[in-house]
Length: 361
Image (cartoon, rainbow, N blue to C red; front, side):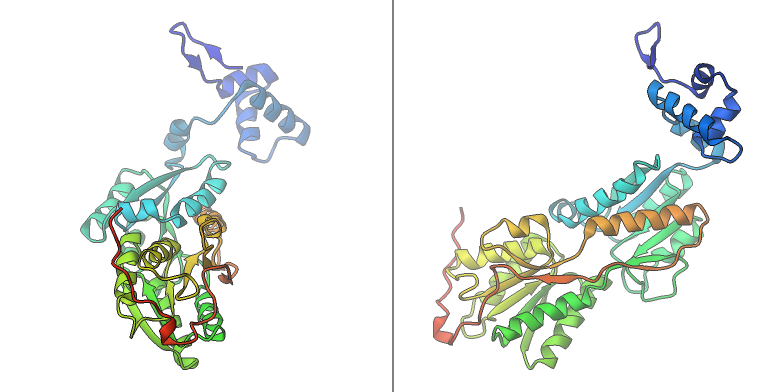
């Protein structure tokens, strides 16, 4: 148990305290706690049990000074904070990261900055102040300058996805192309011949990849397609949906979205304008966030395991920091989960009711 100081503060037990209780040297305790060779199994187990009973935990500041490491990893999100706050992918990804970091005595340093000079400054500050030992590089962009920057700063890194340029870092990737193709196949089999896609920013490789897969799948199935680009936010997803459904003569019979929050905003817009989902308009999202199965109608979406993605990325980055070899990792491909928001295409144009003007509520 921890002792209480004269000032009433709880004093953390030290290695010396554990050594005194176990009747061994501080060096032996250090070796046992750090899983180093030279300690027999019975002695190691006894020391670990005593340390746990006393509530001993490593002093991160002391470890940092002795090893010249911060015992922290960084995630710099180059997106508007409002978009990050509203996208359920990021909390799930971070939960996966924390699943690996917490048992390893590591911390996550999170920063959200707009693309541009501030992002580069943030990486430089994290490195110069030794706040992190490595970083996750997310939302890869064309010819991403962060790869060279992070390498020049001497930080370990792992990329989320494959860059389009040569990279010195390992990657952890989910193939989302098959998921988008499966969505188009599903809609085409339901008779849809006019399908739209509300994409994310084409500056991001994953948004461009999903858009390319959508257009290629439509072309291969003789489907007319249309794409509107957004910033991934629910607001712009709603605005894009309004544009797409405004004219009954050109309205698509199905819309796919590059994430679930835009799809859910789109469903709300369509219903407020008097359209029935999916009788008049089928809609599908991407990422299969938890809320997708509970809304009405439940949302057809492409499932990716964001928690496992975060955990795998954390394992890769910890291995890189430790100097261990780590090859690129390909996680299970994205898969389509069909729910209530997609159905057969309307039988004729007459089945499309004229849109209503959405009222403010």
